[in-house]
Length: 247
Picture (tube, rainbow, N blue to C red):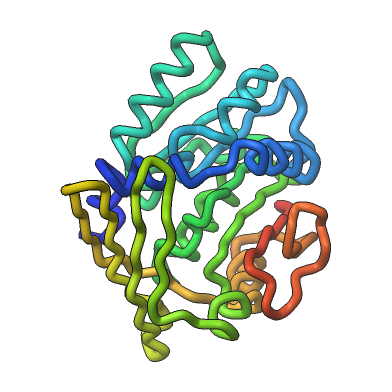
């Protein structure tokens, strides 16, 4: 069973949510609304949606959102928010690689939040193809990753740590395995007397490889950006926002 099946619960789950910047999330939602050409009548698919930090604001505007995530904790939270505020928001709690979607059912799709690197090459291609098949011809797809080879490898850190809100400390020891093309990280979360450790694999691709996988799925890459201001991605940029159009 892949690492992400058991990762997103308890302390790591809480740490991830506390680490998010609400103002930055608002900027990301504005970015998605623009590059995906989302309108009030749009039907949009959020892959690996988490607790819906992008989906909920869009649903509040009348967008029909479908969200999928493997975390039962996040899915339960998202369902409760949708019910409380009567949002047009469908939640699917499942592994995205095991779930199927109606073809050409959505106007747009996105995977934002650094989840794109969860899968090996074959599964990543499958993941992209699922998004492509779910979106109508002419529709747009956006993904985000901080684990692009051009971002990670120039300043690779074997060890790093950072404080998280509510006295949570995050530590990671990283090993890059070039033959397999992934970083294996031992991640530890500490809060008071509670300590949780997971081994995580983040699969690393170059921008050229990702572009090839998108094109192989019938998608035309129309933008590769290093930030939300839509500056073109360059070597050493900390993140990638990629936008593609279904042919």
